[in-house]
Image 1 (cartoon, rainbow, N blue to C red):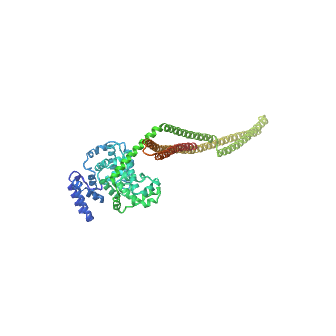
Image 2: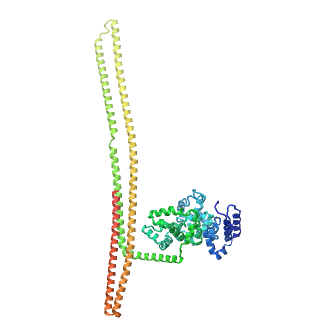
Length: 623
């Protein structure tokens, strides 16, 4: 395996001193390194060789060194030492895990090509980098089936594989998931990510109030730009040299560095962000911020450690977030218990309307298909104008040829008839030819032969004309057949074109139907979300009304106590009672206003749902 790291096997097996000395000797042998780098190599070699003592006695000094950056060739072993992953029993199970089948394999294969697509180790399909990345992700999905595979974790594993072999990368990744809150971040519910967004937003509100107000006015939520910071530890935000320096500190100090770097970024870009709208801020986060520190990450890291980070306050925010969730769940249960029947009825109405709109769209599609079939039948029954003209021309030509043939046949029959009459007259004249002298008989015989020859010639000519007539008829029939065949081919071609057009039209209609269904589903989802939002607001108002009613009851109790105990004189008690009555009237008025507002909101949500359902059904009807 041609990994970009120095082998640390001996060090991980216990011979750390030898490994450190070899690293130091190799560094001193390099002529391109400066004295400062040589000193850093020697120092880190000693730290690695004496890790247990250094970690216990000089923890602060180690943190300071990590903040300045771990030398590239020491990263593999230092990362393993920082997270205590150098001797994990699960490493022996790695080869067995690779032989098993994971239900997440397809998802992992799909996302591998998107992980560091420009890095030489991963960019080629089915390369060594992609294969070992798939192995580590698959093995972890089998170890932790609750988390399985989550997008974003592949970038962390990819960075580990750039520093160490796959077995060691697997052990480090398991440690990160277990001990660095990453497992909670990557759970399907992503509750820990929501907590981080809440804590980070509170930090912005405290330290950058103007920017917080601007974000709120633009509806620019924290998750729109900061969720990838926590899920990938800035690996998808900055170039690898900067992101690796931040990851060094993350291995030493945990998620605290993500809060610090995130707030430092906002402080350094506050003036520009205040001038931009939501789209401009998104573009700024995606295109400008990643290249602000190409010269080096030292400025960013120094600014991040000038940020005030209060661990106790973070714990307090975690508790507040948990209490808020519990209160929301309680309010949801109360609102559901009070309005469950109405909500179910409304959902049933929405479902009926959705089914009606879908049935109307199906009917419209069926009607259009019937119209298309009817038009096809009409087109097939109606002849083409060009074909009609050709048939008329062929009919005229056939009739002319038939007339010529009839005229020729009549002439031949007349000739035959004339010859027969002439022959009869000749026979009548030559009845007494044997009584005449021999010379005269010879002349008569010659005349008879001549008439016989002429008669045969006339019969031959008649047969010849009949043959020509038959040939002409056959040629005409052949031309008619050719024309029929050509017209049939043209009709087949036109029918094929019509079939293609109709199939394309049918696909278009199906696409329109699917689009109508999708829009209808979106409208239904939006209407449901609006209804739920209104219900949540209504639940808050109900809670406020309950509190106000309790306050009214307390004031009334105070009024009664004032009357009974007689602590005040008559004038003072009357004035105190009047003040209490005025407060009670104001509170009653406020309660009625809140109830009226909640009723208006409920009616408004109902009208919005009705209007969205009506617009979706009208759109499907038009389609």
